[in-house]
Image (cartoon, rainbow, N blue to C red; front, side, top):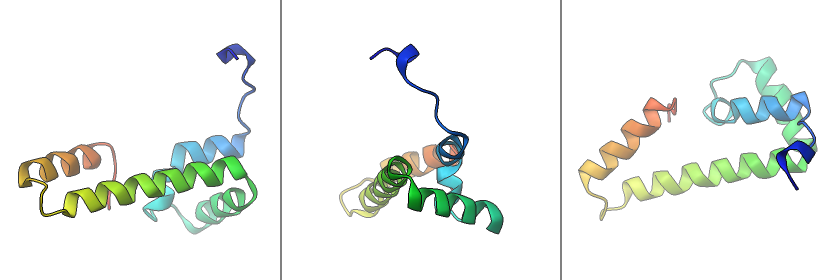
Length: 88
């Protein structure tokens, strides 16, 4: 299937795609949080995307805290995440 054949995402799914990190970080206002929460509960694709992002974040967090990770590596990963807007 080519990109031209992929149907556009509904606006609700685009909102999840664009704001999932803010949602997971608790940085959205109550109204937006509730709208995303309701959509994610109803949309299997968005639920799976949100779950993937949560698992990714958990994996990075657990690796950063492992005693084998050098302080330099940990600092570079955290700096990179902060640069991309991660506030956790």
